[in-house]
Length: 220
Image (cartoon, rainbow, N blue to C red; front, side, top):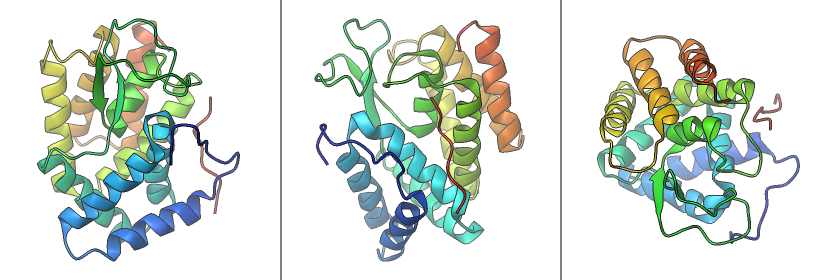
């Protein structure tokens, strides 16, 4: 899918989630399953990366535990091999960029960001066509946390990644606000809090810092 393509106004998220799961189930190894995730993410492109996050959320929304575990284990392998499907967004402070869907090329001064980190950055920065409000963030983050949480290995790896990102002052992706959000996310996730409570803690942190569109999924 090229950068000029857009999502349908009412995508079939159930059908898309089912197709993704079937694609993963058809692969003989975890690395081949990561190939599938990467291909889907690449086909959507940076401008439609919110659609990739919604696709993962749809798996959590519609899928049974074993289905969520399948996708979560694939994400764990992606994290282990540094192949987490990601978007490129402008580094903090890089000027002249009005969002992933703005139609122009991304600036060369950009950073890769995975789905949970993308949501945290989007909550406080203009990186997509529309702002992400607190309610939309909580919906999206709760789904994604529930999905990754189906695999203890994926959870541990993702928490470690978030902590490493927060501890690196030179990586260029996060401003003070989004860095604080991923710190809160990692802390509450490591403590074993439920997904909805973690998501709400992050939005409270964003509101406290003074920085804060819809994400929702239709019922099947």
